[in-house]
Length: 167
Image (cartoon, rainbow, N blue to C red):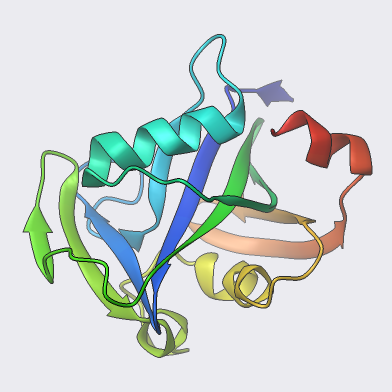
């Protein structure tokens, strides 16, 4: 199996809403997703996610919590996406909707993001996001795809050394 670069994905929470990005480009073009991107050489995943959120949304995160690793398998490729959660004060000033080069940023109610009939959100988010929001121990979430369809989803404990490596 060909393992590609590491990525980050952060869910920025303010009250009962998440700052979501409707992506302009592949992958997940036209779907709502968290913020993040590729871990650059010399960066830790935590450094990467702070940089990505600043670049994509103009928000300088001070407190970000590692929440797990999503392993995404498609055909003969695999990627690890380091998952993070950041909480902002409810009075944090940020526009309701903002258009950027990456796509449209908007605050979406958590209930809307997780709604079972919501086809506008990246398909695996409703599976793993409740665990992240519950503040449980970081887990490994494995999603295996055939074409565009998720055919396997498993959750397992994350080794302690993996949690340390993300800092």
